[in-house]
Image (cartoon, rainbow, N blue to C red):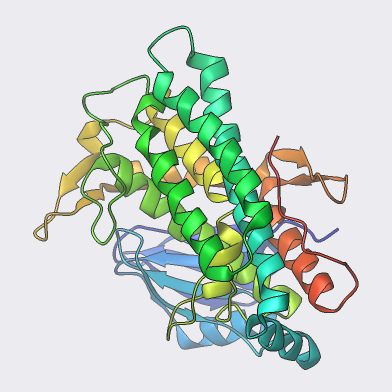
Length: 343
């Protein structure tokens, strides 16, 4: 089993990262704030005005530690990685499958089925936990409708049909998402999914968590030798990690959405931690961002039993396991790609 390494998140503006021997050192205003051995890290994520020395970037590349740069709000800018890993034959198999409908449709069907089933599970858990406290009729209707969509996936024959079902699933799920917020309802009212920029605090939380998640999934794809840019569900587009976005679909609801709801419902974040920027988007302040990053790291360290391999693993390793299963399918070691189904 692959070891779950830590991710170093640096969000303090003006921070400077450099190498000292086998360690990564973080300084703020020329004062050392953190020192950690490189072998303890799987990746480094820098938010906003955070700088890294060239020797550190080279050291990270040699050590297999990716360094990513994001805006303060969590929008992806760039990454620095070492040499491409993996067998070129695997990537060729991936490219061939992505262009072959007969190979592509079963993979997309599995991904959309995983997303649909996991979205339904989040709603079912909300019914179990809060069903007697408020009107949850919309959630009940959404659960029934998502079950119907799972059956429709079995008879869909084209990728475009499956994409249409995936879009319907997302709209239905987010159509009752506001009913899952049972605390601070006025401050965290959710109307619809909005991106670039997020227009309310809930969307700001979701967008930030999705950015963290896609970073992890992208790293998982690269670690097993897959090309994160070439996907099956998401169309290829320059600069877009389509495969990482594909595999993330199964994990959005159980990893990111559940965490956002917990932070709100347990009052670990508050409306005072969000502000509107000049473009009309909502961003988080430093304290809220740090709360979110700490909670996300703790979520990744929680364990579960993977339904396919039937082994206990940290949540943070699930992207790696799914990328590995997809690679095995593309190598013809598995008859099909088994999606991650959360229980």
